[in-house]
Amino acid sequence: MGQLDPQPAPRRQTRLDRYHDLYAERTKGLKASAVRSLFAVANRPEVVSLAGGMPNIADLPLDFVADTAAKLIRERGPQAMQYNGAQGEDRLREQICEVMAVEQIQANPDDVILSCGSQQALDLITRTFIEPGDVILAEAPSYVGALNTFQAYQAHVVHVPTDDDGLIPEAVRQAVVAVRATGRRVKFCYTIPNFCNPSGVTQTVARRRELLEVADQTDLLLIEDNPYGLLCLDHGPLPALRAFDHERVIYLGSFSKTFAPGFRIGWALAPHAVKEKLILAQEAATLCPPVFSQFLISEYLANWDWLGQIETFRTMYRARRQALLDGLDEHMPGGLTWTRPGGGFFVWVTLPEGLDSQAMLAQAVTHRVAYVPGTGFYADGLGTRNMRLSFCFPTPEDIFEGTRRLGDVVVDALTVARTFGLTAPTEGPDS
Ligand SMILES: Cc1ncc(COP(=O)(O)O)c(C=O)c1O
Image (tube, rainbow, N blue to C red; front, top):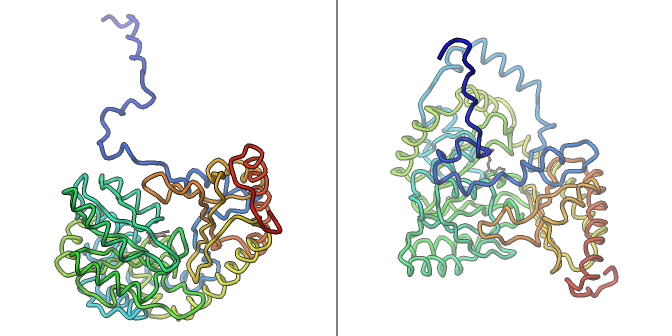
């Protein structure tokens, strides 16, 4: 072709995404997080967001953290900003054992592996255990971030029912038997025993013991995800599942809710052999968790009253939980129910038959309030009549106002549903 010949026109794109055919099979079922797609609207100042799960870290000792960070860089910079081992710093792993002792866990620092938030520990565990098609039992409803990870590794999630006392051990046994009868493998059972995200429900200690018995009898591995256990608002911390059993439980912890999520430090405490596998997985995934963050958290634990700081957080969250529960009591019409969590960040609302939380969301945002619809917390499409409301971030006054706005949205939706005969008329004074 001569210099002045026209260039061939670029081939017209026939698909929106030119890489569509190259993506791995495992990406096909991945959904945008309902929370993420909401963030843009929910973060507008005029909207009261009962949607996000961002910890409220305004009460952190920022001057202390700033001084510690500066000192670290000045005095140990070359080490703190270097690569390090995949398992994480020895000193921090020892300190983490002291943190876990608050929940009656006796652990050897050698069995702790650090991760980029407990989210990454979930990923490492899933990639270590799951072959496509393997079954994971997960309490219903379950943390959306865990479900996404399970989906990413093409696990088949089978939900197990919970009630006001948490995961039902007998239902776990039945689920294991039923899955095995079909010739499939159950790789583990995922549970959040304390102040579950999204339900707010806590598993009783009696149930924990029963669950471990079932795990023993059915030869089942339990994943205990526990980012909220120390944010208990009505009583002291409960003993973790891992406190009763060293071999059947992989425990996940995090500094995201008790210190700050931005440092991205969580951990797994695993039976010895499993830990070795997780270290290999960690090497492949990130080489090592962030070293500077590890050093900083280590200094924080050594030189700040971290338990006192958690008490400060508890006082702050208690007022917010009260505002949410008072607001719901005052503003919701009859026919709805909700959980009354003893800690954590979340309340789980069940709407009357005929209402759909996803369909209601646009109306809610128009009324300047946001929540997370329940379907994201199930792998099987349930949850249309549920909403997750969080009480962690806005002020108590805003939370209360948010429930007023939400009450109006629900009343409107109920009126429409009744007009079209979609829901039974509700008894009660405020129906
Ligand atoms: C139940 C549960 N597990 C794990 C995580 C991940 O936390 P991180 O990765 O910040 O430790 C969260 C975050 O909200 C959560 O709610």
